[in-house]
Length: 108
Image (cartoon, rainbow, N blue to C red; front, side, top):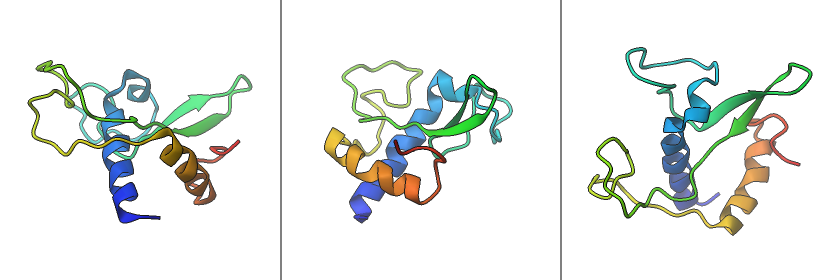
């Protein structure tokens, strides 16, 4: 897999950790003083109707934003590398992630 694509995935998966759906995933929390799960990697957890826990890859498609909200890591004035993941790139990479067993059941 291309290094640039891997860099994009790391940035976008790390940015998804601030989403509220990952905050209660039940995974290890590095930052006990803050809100949500501060551990990076973009893996969050959900439960099936029969009670099984499944790991899901959560990532942003882009970390670019036109707004400048003071609380947001993706705010316009934040000095960070901006990346965009196209739908085609996401579709290409997800089966590879599933094959690597990073996301059990993550591929169709």
